Amino acid sequence: MSGSLNRSNMHNIKSIFLVGLMCFATWAQAEADLDVATPAISALKNSMQARHAQLAAHYASGAVGLTKDGLIALRDITAVPLKDRQGINALVAAENDDRVALYKEIAAGNGHPEWRGEIQNTFSIRWIDKEPAGWYYESGSAWVKK
Amino acid sequence: MKKAVIAMVVTLGLSACVTINIYFPAAAAEKAADKIIDDIWRLKDAGPSPKKEEPAK
Image 1: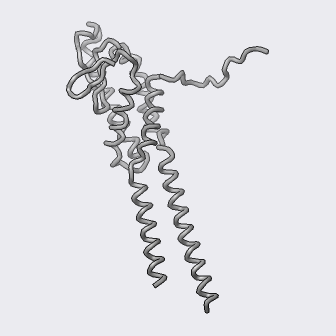
Image 2: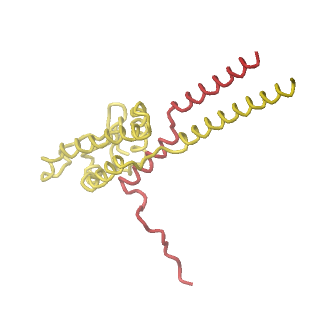
Image 3: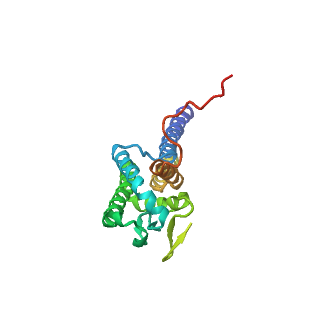
């Protein structure tokens, strides 16, 4: 009698242990890394990388700055060379479309579309943290030169 | 009685797992953001250049 009870107890303990282990494995995997190599994310990255060749000069001149919500904005049209003025709004809009899509894709690609806002928040901090000195970023309601 | 306790523990354990899984992985997100930003802005001299110039011996 007590032998069979022990055995069933052991079995239960084993089950609990296994469930715990599985949970931990899932959690560890979820926490370890976000997958940022999905085709959609790679495509967005390539598009932004290519556009950066055009944008870099505008960041440096202060024409375009990084907003506090992880996007970019035109802050001084007079700093844009005449030849680029016509296209600057479209350039900024295209970059922002890609950024919004990027945040969305990272969240969705990792099975949590509801993370989009938090991912955008994370990016907004990291963009500004990583931008070179001399570029502008939005702080409160003012532009600050880094 | 024992069964009830075990069932409770399992339920608690499972709900804890679910909670953890839904929780936003801030550190992982930061790491992912850094990697993507480095790539887009080409901050790290990325590119396949594993062969560092090794001084000829």
